[in-house]
Length: 65
Image 1 (cartoon, rainbow, N blue to C red):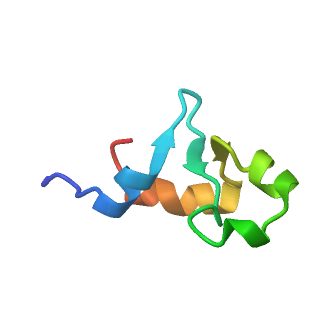
Image 2 (image 1 turned 135 degrees about the vertical axis):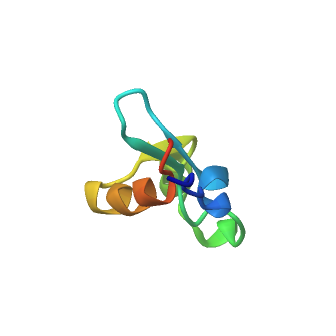
């Protein structure tokens, strides 16, 4: 069987935890931050765990993740 290809965009944006959950950066933090509340910017620091429905899609992009 040939090897499966990993989506290059996914391997740059997502990491898997040791328990198999998908870790990603928070959205809406690139530009236009002056209009965001301080609470939103503070809670969006670091990374977050994706919801199950989204994680299922991302895992299909990372066959060997």
